Image (cartoon, rainbow, N blue to C red; front, side, top):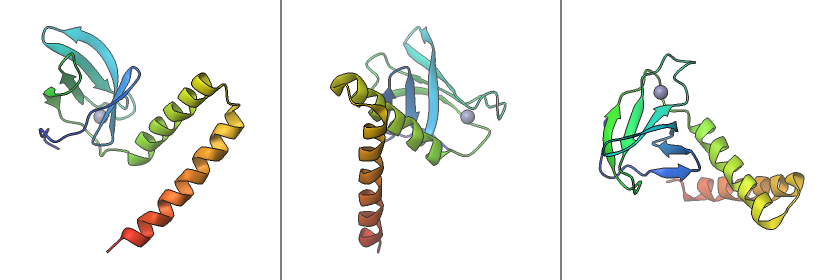
Length: 116
Ligand SMILES: [Zn+2]
């Protein structure tokens, strides 16, 4: 998959998600921040991305050896939201999970209706 200007960079703490590929922060490089694929061990993947320090643009992109895992990306997002809720609202994990699960079910349903 080629990198495009329209690619959305989702920042999740020390990780970024781009096109459902998850990357973990590796190091600062001359012109930005380098992230490597979280699947690099599992798939011997050399996928990586370098983004500018304000995290708005992709500077360099290295191809992956596997397809993106949208389910895992979704898990990563959901876990982050749950953690934030717990930290910010002192919610108990089971309550946060229940709320999150409900919103997913609602989203799923609306997706079905929107499908053309
Ligand atoms: Zn990869």
